[in-house]
Length: 518
Ligand SMILES: [Zn+2]
Image (cartoon, rainbow, N blue to C red; front, side):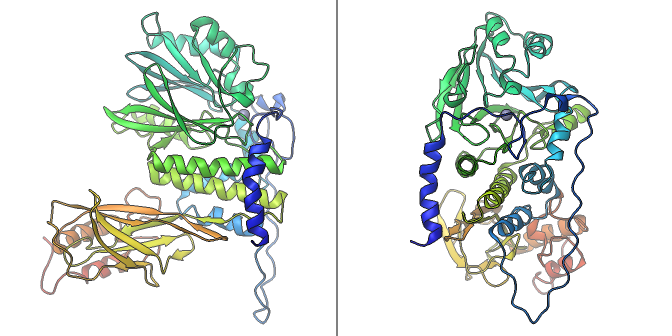
C-alpha cells in the first residue's frame, strides 16, 4: 500500500466517524469558517470585490524540467477541463462548486442578496411548480393523491404570505392534502416555515436525522448514517433518498419522479450544495457524497437538477426562460442526464481541489469526464466507429463496446491515438433501419485517475443516408461550438470543438465514389 492508498482507505472511516453531532453551520458558501451575516440579505449589499488574478509567471526556461503540478493544481485543472468547453458547465455549475477553491466566495454572497426578490409560482412540469425568491425556494408536486413539497419555506412570513396561498391556489383541501415535505437540510432557509406549514396542514416533514436536533416542528427523521440510497413512498409517490453529509451532517438528497408532457422525468434535488467549512473530515464527507450522488444519478438516469438554491445549478435561468416562453413539452427545465453527470463530476473536482488546499498531502484521484459519439457515417454496414474524448484531448487505448440497444453484443474495439475505436468490417448481420446501436466506454480507474464512462446511441443506417444527413447537419451547424444545441460531436470530424469547413469536407470525402447527396 502506498501513501495515497492508505489515505484513501481511511477516508471511509473518517466519513462514518464525523456524521452526527456536528454543529449546524450557516447556509451558503461562507467558507473560511465564517458565520452567516444576515446583513448580507439586504438588497443592494455590494459583494466583496473579486480578487484580481495573479500576474502571469515569466515563461518557463525550456532547458528546465517541467514543474510538477501540486495536488491542488491537478484538481483545479480537472475542474476546468471537465467543463468540456461547455459555457453552461463553466457557469453556473463550475463557478459555484469552485467558489472556495477559486477564492471567489463573493459570487455566493452576491446571490444571497437576492433573497428578497420574489419569483412567482411557476409551473415547470405537468405536476411540479417552483415558488420562492431568486436565492432560495420550494418545489411543489401535485397529483391525484395530493401534494408533496420540497423544503419547508424560507421563513414563517413567506410561508404565510406565499407558500400556503400557492398550495391553496393549486387546490390544497381535505381531499387534496399535503402528504409530506422533503427537507434538504436543517438550515433556516430550508425549514424556516416548517412550523407554520405543519400547523396549517399536519403534513409530516422529513429531515436527515443528524440535522433533526432542537427542531420545534418534530421532523420525521431520515437516518443520516445510511450510505446507500433507498426509497420511501410519500402520498403514493416513490422518492429515492440519499444521505449526503457535507454541507451539514444531515444534508439529504432526493430523486423525485414527475411527469413531463405525460412522460416520466426524474429530478435530483440536491441537499446543501455549498461547502461551508475548513473542517477536513467534513470536506471529505462532502466529496464522498458527491461520489455517491454521481453514482445514483447515473444508475437512475436522472434527467435534471432542481436545487432549492436556484442560482446554483442554472434552475433560475430555466425558470425565467419558461416564464418568458411559456412551458413547452418537453419542459425547458430538463438539461439531460449527460450534462447533470458532468456537473456532478465538476463538483467533485472542485471539492477535491478544496480538500487539497486544506490538506495538501491528502490525495484523491482526478476524475476525467469522457464523452463518446459515433463518427460521421456510423453506425452503418460499412462503418461502426466511435470517438472517445475528454477535456485533455482524444482518449487512446480504451475499450469501446458496441451493442444493439436491446443489449446484444456487436463488436469491441480499442481507441487509437485520435480516440477512435473502429470495428472490423464487414459487420454482423444487422438490419438497416431497424436497429439502434450503442457505443459504450465503461470507464477505468487507477490510483491517480478515474476515467468516467460514457455512452452514445444512434440508428443503424446505410452509409449514404447516414453521411448525407451528417453533411446537411454539419453545413447547418457550421460555426457552432461545444455547448451549442446544434453542435454534435459526430459532425466534428477533426475534433476541434467547432463545426467548420474542414469538417464538411472530411464528411463529404467519406461518400462512396460517384455518389452524391440529394
Ligand atoms: Zn444550508
